[in-house]
Each structure stands twice: as structure tokens, then as C-alpha cells.
Length: 279
Length: 241
Image (cartoon, rainbow over all chains, first blue to last red):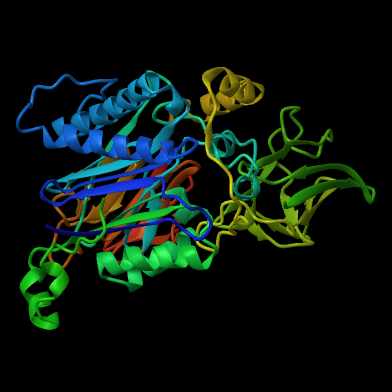
């Protein structure tokens, strides 16, 4: 399978600073996205620190394969899933430590959603209300659960999804990096199929763009970078109330490669594997 | 928000909103709409949202459930419909926003600036405490060792039954498929079954599957006993105790 990805982050139309961060590590097929919170510029610090820490720990795999695994582990998890989950625990510790050493950073935190593809296996690790979606056969499925108060209330049947979207409490998170010294990380594994599309996004997208719209747009736009750009543009058309970050990862069939080259010619964005943006 | 009004002798006895979970109707006191009448079964019917539509389902009641005077087992409800149960009438009002419309457009909230905050454990505990008892008992009841299983009724597959343990299940010829189809010209990914918060949904892959003989338009929620047909294979979806 061949993988093409693209990511875009945008400050939006209302905010003056961008507290989202993301990184695409093409050689590893690693995708990490974080949405920071905290006064002044501290949200930016938290999200950048979270992304850096996760990327570093995953890139260290070869040099230090026996690194200690943090947090609970489910039977059957691959080494990659354990490492990714550990990396998110580490990111939490880094943010807590930084806030301890710099009192002005107190209260800063970040959501984090990460995906790591190894062959056909997808590992996901996640904390907060940024999301990972899988588009397969025209069906968009949210892989992550939002760790927000309203999402929890919906799951418990206390309120409806429609009420959740109107709620004043939408921004209240139950879990985030930096909130507590020890956190719970959601991690899971899935098998990828050719033509699957993976989407990571911050809530700046999902607050204003609906899931059917996301599914439609990703089906209509086969280019990963342009897909990400169009999603961000649509969120901005809707007012861009928050920072918007979108990472699109497309799983292609290997055998289609020569055919698609013949059909479309060697496109220039294949030169850098379809990546743009990135911090 | 959509609501149901329980009426007797043209008077509204009780009103309940229909939200994320099913409204149950019956003579047992733990029903959401409790109707103390001998013509009503203990657990008579339930009304819930599915794919953005309000649906009424009769729970094998003795005297039946009627929508606009037609006896039904399961029916989609529309605004103003009247559901007859015994001598009681339930009036349907769908004028509010429907919850969780997966296929149809999801209404977006008005943009608003607000800072994200995290609840510390104490606050979090307090805010969720009120619902904890209810939530947990609900989860307990629904997860009482009910294992979603696909039984193969016909066609060539690598096993005779499959327990759905993963969030994503693929039916197809692919090596990576959970339900592996055998034979020439079978699609790599014929269809998929995905677990969501409220149940298991069947969605199309390279083929459009049928459920109980009807081709699906988009992802639809599977019910105990549904028969799925795709690419020459017949599967029975059941919850095993």
C-alpha cells in the first residue's frame, strides 16, 4: 500500500494566535495533531511540546527500542501501539513539568490525536476532543471518542447530540494533556484497506463543518493536500471561530501507481510525497 | 427537541422528550412512559431515533401497537402521528431537532468564541455524579454479556460464525477482512460493520448489501436477528447471551 498525506493549519477568522500544532513524519507514516489551551501564548507552547514529544519518542524507536512502556497496555497491542500510547503519556508529563517549572504556564494543556501506520496496521492514541475519522466505502466513522463533558453526557443518554451541539459546555474537557500528572490515554488498532482515508482534525473543523460534508468533500477531492485545504477553507467560510487543523492521509493501492502516473502524468506534489504545511 | 405526549381521553397525561436513548412504553413501572392498564404489556413498545428518523418498535406485545390505526411491528413516525397502545394514545411531535442524524445533515452550532477548559477530577466527579447511577446501570444492562455475532446462513466463507470483537469489521475477499469470502470475482471489501456508541451499523463497501431483503441506502443500525446478504453470502446478525 502507498500512503499520501497532507496537512494544513490555520488561525481561523476570529482568533489572533494559532494554538494548534501538527506534524507529519513521512518516513514513519506518523501523524500527530494537538490543540493547545491556556492564556497568553501558553496554548501554543503546550500543543507544540505535545507534538514534539510524541514525534521524538516514536522516532527514537530504532535507537531505543526497549524504552519503558507507560500506562496500561491491552493484550495483543503491537509494539507500535504501545510506543505511541507511551509517547502520549510522556507528552503529558512534559507539559506538567514545564508548567511546574514556569508558574506563568500554570493551567496550560493540550488535546492530542495521533496515528501511526505500519504496513496495513493503524495505531491510534488519543486524549481530548480533537478527532480521528476513517472514511471507508463512503462511510465516515469517528475512531476516537471525544473526552468532553457533552460527549460523555450524550453517551450516558443525559442529553441528545443536537443538545450537545447547542450546549454552552462544549469546550469543557474531561481529559487533556497537562491537566493531571497521570492521565488515561485511549489507544486502539485497526486494519487499513486500500482507498481508506484517515482524517485527523481539531475541533475548529468539526464545530462548523458537518460529518456528511466532510465525507462528501473527501470523496470528491482525491488529492490529500487539496482535501485538507478545502476543509480548512470551508471552516473559514463558516466563520472560522477557532483554529483549524486538518491532516488527510490517503491509502492507495500499490498496483494503481503506474496507471495513475500514466493517467495524470507525474504530478509535482508527488515530489514531496504530497506534504505541505507542517510546523 | 422531539417529544411524545401520552394522552388518555384527549388529555395529556405525560410528556417525554425523545433523545439519544430509546423511550420505552409499558405497564412495568421502570418504563419511561408507564401506562397502568391491563391492555398494555409490561414492556410494550419503544420509540427511538435511527438515522435521523423516529421509529416505533413493538416489543412483541400481546395487544399490539398501532400507528394511525394500522397494526405495526416497526414503523417510521412522522410529526402528528398517533401511536395507539391499549386505550392510550401517544402523539408524536418531531418539530424539534432530531438527535444523531448520521446520514442527514448535522446541524452546526452557532460559532462562538470560548476558551477550552478542563474539569479537574473533583468537579468532574460532581458533574457526572447525578447521572452516574443511571448511566452505569444502563451500561450494565446493555452489556450483560451480549456478544454480537454473525452466523453464516449461506455462501462460502472461511468460518461458520464470527464474533464481532473489533470496532471495524470488513466482509470481503481481502486477506485482512474479518469475514473472508471465498470464490472468484468476490470483491476485496464487499461491506463493513462498524461499532458506534449506540450499536452496530452495516455500511456499503464495493457492494450494497441488503438487510432483510432491502438494499441499504447508507449505514444502518443492525438489530438482533437481521439477515444480511452481500456478494452471494447470507449472514445472520444476532446478539448472543
